[in-house]
Length: 221
Image (cartoon, rainbow, N blue to C red; front, side, top):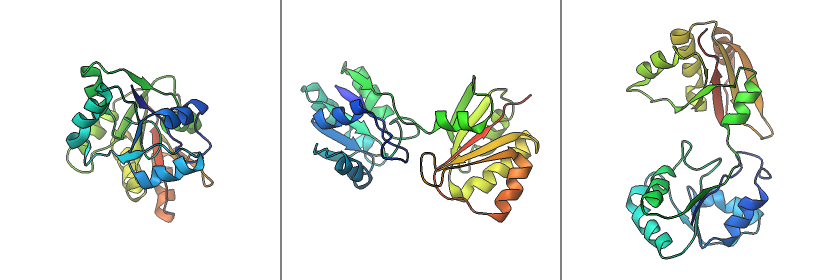
């Protein structure tokens, strides 16, 4: 059995009882960063063996883990924060297990997208998740497509590109398009910045943001 186990996005208490039990019971935990995940496992007194599984080694190691599972062992896959496979490693191993007829279980749990959408104050009955925009090639094309969507849009952005991102919302979607920057969810400095694209852009001229950021954009009217 392969388990995909969500881990806290900030507050270490945001983990389910079931997730802790699975991490205790499996034969192996695959972690995006063993140092980061080590703090979580230590906090919950989980002594399960852990190995690194990330974007730089997943293609080289996926077959060996599928074979390990096929022998009857169990693996839990975790990322640094949130649900594996959502802008984090996980899809390749999941697909390979499905193709090999290995049972897969995805536990419900922490993810930044849903609380950010709700906290934004924008309609979230229908939404589109973009993930991370391309840094350079294809970025303009993606913005042109996003600008035409009528549903609310959510995407991830890094602190050092957040000003550029909001400026691009103003450029491609219009200065009056409503946006919300939701950062550091569940942490001490949790914050939501709401306003039009031009208003938020002006605010970011005066201050620098830090931490994990979700940008929520209203759909085209």
